[in-house]
Amino acid sequence: MLVYLVLTAISLIIAYQIRSNESAPYIREGQYCNVYRGISRANMKNSVSLLFLFVILTGVSAFRLNVGNDYSKYVEFMHRTYSNAFVPTEAGFNYLTKIVYHLSGFENYVAVFAIFAALTVFFFLAGIFAQSKDFFLSFAMFMLLGYYFQSLNTVRNYLALGIAFYSIRYCIKRDWPRFVLLMLVGSLFHKSLLVVLILYPLAQMKWKRWMHGVLALLCISCLFLKDFYLAVAVKLYPSYEGTEYLSGGTSKMGIARCVAVLLLAFFVLGKDVVKDRRMSFYFYANYGALMLYVFCSFLPTISRIAYYFSVTQILYVPALLVQLLNDKENTRYRAGRLFKVMTIAGCIMYFAVFMLKAGEDGVRILPYETFLFHELPATLSERGFG
Image 1 (cartoon, rainbow, N blue to C red):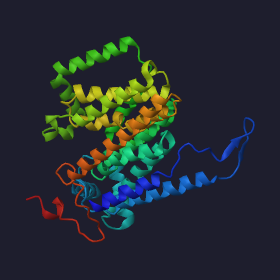
Image 2 (image 1 turned 60 degrees about the vertical axis):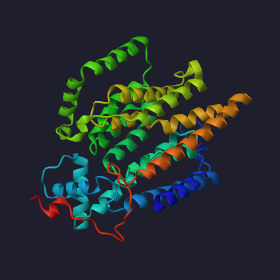
Image 3 (image 1 turned 45 degrees about the vertical axis):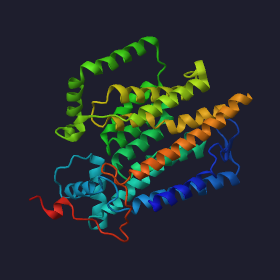
Image 4 (image 1 turned 90 degrees about the vertical axis):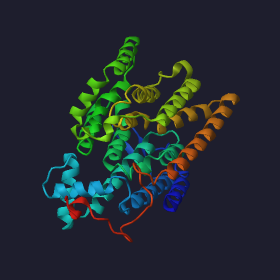
């Protein structure tokens, strides 16, 4: 646990130095002429700090060995795909494994995990820096709410989540070619990303009253057509058939967080909660996550689908608080400072509880071990199937 605590402390100190709203090094003169005016000290500081964050976050993830509930399972999948045996993983994961193993000359699963770590950290850091109104608070939520540490566990799913998070900017701007391309490429590593092609455009729409009525009917239908929807889900994800995932389940903490964020949005924005395009997207994303948590708990691993919506909280909450803190009215400014303190305190409490449970089955990111000093226990192929 000491490794994680030190990593979190150092990364938060570095993140505090970053300002994501610095001006660009180019200025526009005329319609087609951009003049380079040199990189400012602040931009250089941002670049160096981001590089340090990328290196230390990727390093801790890449150097791990048998850390994560599914680490050995992935090593087994890599061995089987390299042997041209059947595996339930997607083509991108399989071909990446074969390429790395071929170039390495041996079954270098550590390198495959390192590549996944680097890509996941890159997409999250780039997404936060490009989209957040308060880089430090967004990054603190990313670390303290466990997004980074969970990426040590479900590596394919969190790479997909990082790609989805990064793509939010394109969806809001309605840059559909880039958005769709990112989703299709990302789905080669985790096919659940394909649902984002539906979820994010829905959150980006301007919802009318009749649309809310249709949504209400769909939610009610989940109470009576559970078996039908579950059968469809198993058809789409046949690997879930006969597993413990079919028992369903939801996240009470996820519900509480969505409710708290939506209440904060109404407090800050009031009737204008969906007036701005970006803020409207964040609002409907959290509203959608709440609906999934409440009415679709019978579906396998519904929390992982809801994550594609709820991950917007690390952008939405800072944006709401910045709006309060920029308000000239003294009462709203003080409320903004109070909510910011409460947000950080709540994240720290969540982090403490998460770390206490980090060694349990289903997470198992403790104890932290590295390939520098440890060896991987024998996998199923090495032990034999008998």
